[in-house]
Image (cartoon, rainbow, N blue to C red; front, side):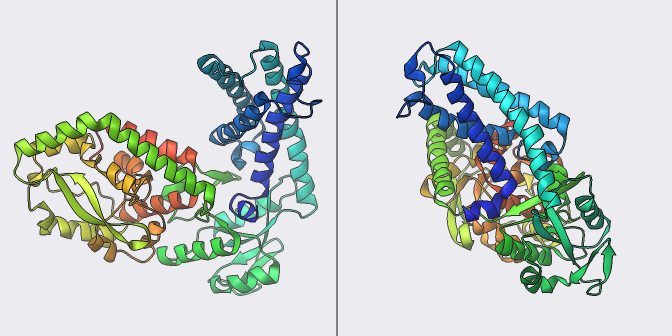
Length: 482
């Protein structure tokens, strides 16, 4: 539970818990007030009927649906009209999905009474409205007035950081965060920044500041530091607090392109601890094994046809196997269909371009290939990502995941900065955020790494579904080789 509070925060966990209780509670009341069958009365009975047990499980899925509707985002629950609309949408989808599942599965765990379902929908919508639009804001205001918010330090003293602090402390606003002071290398200690807030120290003073002021979190705003120092600072904050919110020029590609949360119209990217619990591990491994197995079975005709086409049209092996860097920097044999002529991996001009792309860091570039080496079959299979399908066997072997960081050859890994290598704290993936966004406008090498690190720090079933569906869209549009 402590790790959950560190990763997600008290407010988010409170909303998730109360939403689940409301979903289950209103279901029980709907059964209680329907007297056509006393066996459905779960409140006065000494045991829980199967229908109610399923409702408890279904409520967990609906909490995930609410998350996809952004009902746990600050920018939604601080905007009354948007919040109300999402509540209505969430309640409608909850009941509609329940009725659809009942019709499709015809399972006995679903309540067949339309009256119970209708009552549940009305009670659910009413309870969510009362709690989220009236009780929850009152609790936030109570917390703000009684200093119950998380005590945070703001790193950076440029305009965005100062405005964020002022908005948090403004009387008419209510925030779950309370700024205690600033950290900045360009200010003197105890120098007044805004209002009653001062510079509490320099960046290297963070450990002693945490103990001295009982700091529970950090918000990183624009400050003149390198990528390496920024990532080290993020890692340090995560070790102390389990999370950190970031809004800097170097993270702009994330909070501009991803649907991130906002504080007072300032977009922030939240970086968290990489989940190491049993449930995340079981989910990830189950998704990989089931997804890869289904993929291989369904795509086996394409796999066989591609192998035959490569063998008949160009000399050389069907598969191209080369080492890639895996989790914690460990190399593994990486499988692809061969799409180029023999000797393409010895192309020195391409190697130089890749080196410039990595060392340049902030230079936008699309995929670097020498078209003269691409075979006719290779051009087709690269366009539709068919050459990548053998990676499903890497997933079954446990070397890769369906979704994860972009795998790179050892030589590219070696020429990368140390902060670049942090993305391989998890398994590399067949696809990732880098695949979805690189196909749109092209990305810099640093942006690719930032996408990978963001995924590692925020991976969850909803994000995985978004990436997989986004990748399918990229493939179907013929931009897989972009």
